Image (tube, rainbow, N blue to C red; front, side, top):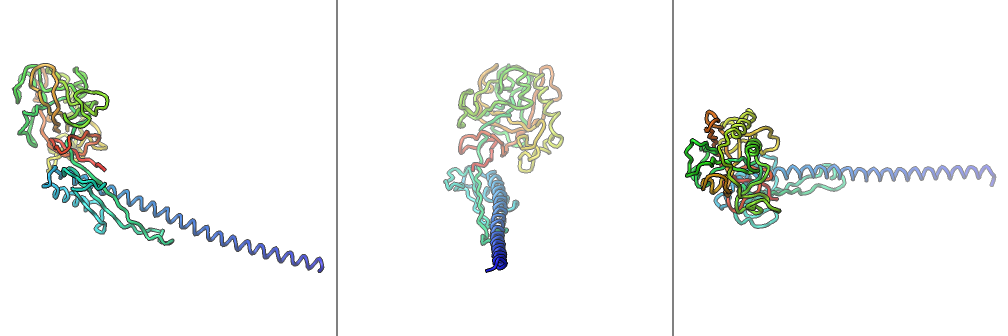
Length: 374
């Protein structure tokens, strides 16, 4: 075989080899494209499913919280609560094709609800694949569940340093005007001793602390006697205290300063009774000082309802039995000398209060709290 022939054969083999490598590269590129496409489709669909799950959870949360407002710890209110939850479900993005279960007898974990103080809303949606059907994945069932309860407001921070005597407000109803701070010339609505004007020392005693607590509410948490984690005095492991002292003395100047601050700095859309309350005898969302995004002072205040306020004059301990939400009307004409009655209007209400201490199980009060429990 000549050198020329050998050279020709070598060139032909090289060309064949190169052609085979090109074919292998084409096959590998095709496989890689398929794999990338599959992973991309799955990634897009996983994101799509996650978004659906998040939105569905928000919808069942809202329905459960709405339904919880209709609970009253008896079976008679169960149908009302379920009806409210159904109505809220229809106002959100829960679809008619979703499978929805609303229950006042079983929570999301399958535990029995014994006192009709909770409601659960469960929704399941068939979510079709967006792109992954290209690789044979046609979709998945997305489910979400929320349980919400209605409880007595057991306490918390942000409480103002005024008090109502529990056995003096038995007949107080919505829109009733009450005196929450008396002056030395006023006849009390219950028997009383001189030197006690319905002010209380929540964060401590003294005019400066009293004035600051009127303006901004208490830093410390106070709570209803009998509430889990609530102690008579502050100690390790306690969520709040149910014993507080009265603040003796007329405290005219600090009272005037604190009340003026609240009235002067409340947002313009929340400074009248008509603006603050709705037809359901509740505080409208825009005027709830505990709501996210609310800024400034507020005329919507929480004060304790106590036992023992009028037992004697001077400083002495009283026991918190309840709380009341009130709209602050202000003081009568002037607040100087010995005259400074402070008046407010009563709002029995249900609220979604963040960081609230939940009251004793199965007990409702002047203020009730709806909150998600799971």
